[in-house]
Length: 273
Image (cartoon, rainbow, N blue to C red; front, side, top):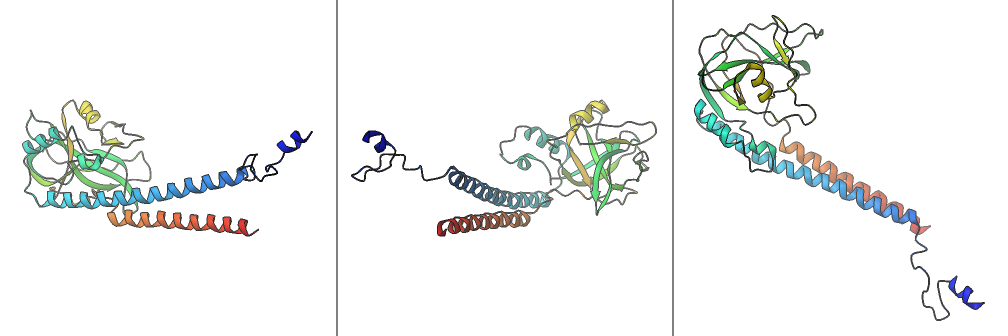
């Protein structure tokens, strides 16, 4: 019958399309276009994200500069700032930190214990950041004071022996910082060994306060003056500058342009064939 023959063709005798107009377009070509658009959009999005981080880092650097130029805060003023920062309104996590404020205190070590923050690197050398806990008054929260970087022994069982500061009052001044929690591991994981420093993995203030049995302020003091100590302080508030983010953004945009050019060249070759 003529009816069956007519249904197998895409064109009627009058030239009107009666079949699927996209039947000539292969599934592989559709997937090719979709993959190209997805990858190109992802690369561009990564570049835009790097630009947004660069803008934030520039603003964050300006904020730190302003804080460094301000007069050093008293401990009571710092406690008030800590309380006010517990409900941050900023979308960026760094913006809620109190890093960069200057602090001046008169305090004494609570004991002769040294705390060692594990897995630190300074100038290509693996080691620890050494801390000692100080008391301002018996009623107020204690504060963690950074003594500096100390290299680690090749044998992890051998911990560096640092002479702790004597339990007398010292006048300390410097800047405070707050490290962002590690999203993969933020546990304290303290190792308390007899007659040895306490080695721990992360600055987890609530867990450290529970271990010490006393409240602890959520900032760390990085003093400029420590008696009998001349250790380096490698931690910086902005490890990745705005210029680095801008460079990474340029790399992502370049990769997007190269990828789109390559896909266009492949399509052009197929079209000519």
